Image (cartoon, rainbow, N blue to C red; front, side, top):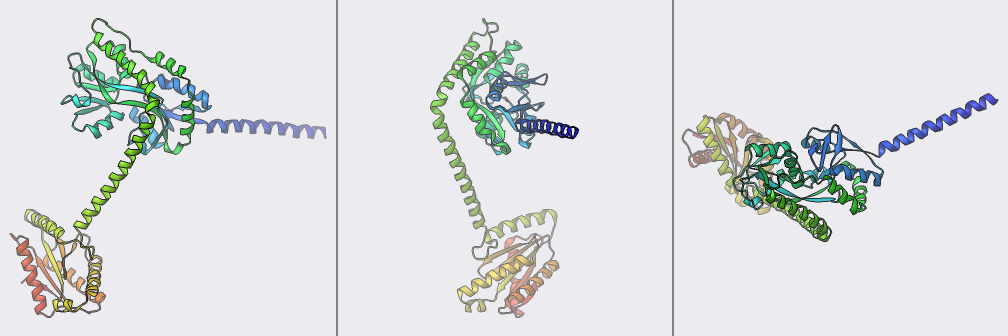
Length: 467
């Protein structure tokens, strides 16, 4: 009995330990958050020997302590690869990103926790540039996937741009003369210039808009946004200042030749301090602007839908929904041009309701008759054919790449289908005319009229060809 009791007790203890470890493992797995970074964006963030370093790394360490989340880096070779991983969900979030319309399709964004200016870098003989409006015909380098690539394409489409893989590549090409200007973040570009002591590069202007850097979270993990926002709101100001001082690597190089450049850098640092101070003051206005922009986008979408509706109505017959005469004229001209160029056949089928019968019908009866005829035409003709109501009692079928006798077969099918649908309650006049060499629309239409008249002479409810 004692042995059995001890055995049972051991099993209970072992089970408790195993279940405790499993619960701890499950909790750790739930709290694991995978993330990607830009591997070449110092001092903001970078990947060195498989380790995440930079300003965003320091912020992430503090937030990890505040939230008790376990962040796991997914290494990538480039920022473009990081964006692809974020969109696919391989990375749940990224640590430092600007909000753009295209990124908003697959990312949600935390509140910005850092605001920094952007600059234009050029060679020492380059004159000062007053923002993007002063770029003119200069060739501007921009990192593919960065916000400025999308910003310039949308708001400054006339600026000549060339995409590069990283800030490093862009500055090297400016240094070599392949590019006139490079746009990017102040600290990132100037950190590279100073670390490599490139004496002939300088800041030639500031570039809008300033960066509002925040965490970007894949939309499948939206629950992280309030957690990150709470952590951002509780970040001590002293920690922010310490991080900025640590990574402010803009150092003085050859002071005698860089006095003007350093003045611009100090102005930039002052702007950062001012922008940090005014951020809280203007947050309400930015929110209002964002809401107004969303309203404008909704109105633009509605306007586009209205324009499409107007375009549809301008090409369609109001009663039957078939194409109208204006649309037929355009398509006929296209087919005549194609026939003249490639020597391909084309035919017209004309269908009329006998005038004497149509005149005796009440308006509502006639309208229902025409709608029935339209439905039969649409269900009988081929996909390539174009059914048109060009006059009140005339329907025309444009048959591209169709010879006369093939069009006649289609006309006979139409006659049978219409007769069955209308129960032979009216007389139909049907003519077929093939486009002849050198004919324009007027001559072709005259041949069609003659064929319809021939059908009338034969008593109607028959198909007549061009004589």
